[in-house]
View 1 (cartoon, rainbow, N blue to C red):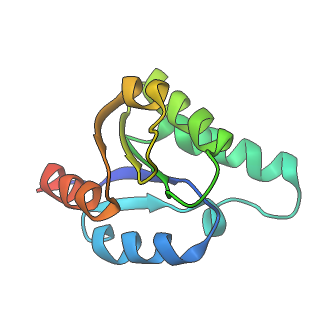
View 2: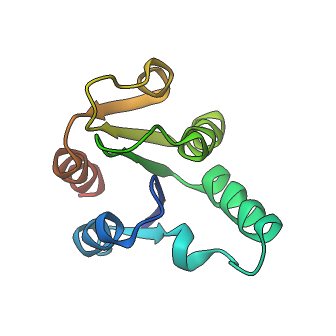
View 3: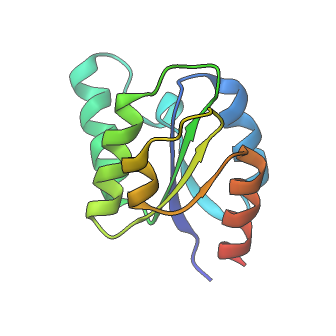
Length: 123
């Protein structure tokens, strides 16, 4: 079975990304913008990330409860959705974004639940 592409959208911090990659790398080809896009200038990483979001089969959008909503994550999720990819949204805040819920196949309150859902989809 061919692995499908999963885009990681959310805060540009390595901690949550590394855990998700460990859990899902056996099931998906994972696009991690921190490592997989050209970081030499803004126009390059934006172009790389837009193309990756458009061409992904799945997008995991993660919003931690202790951070402000991320506009970049919403744009990437919308691009994936518009191109028939499946958005899986996790918002650990007390006020999940209605637009993100609307474009998501599933939404979760905990990252580990979203990761488990993605594993189930891949097997």
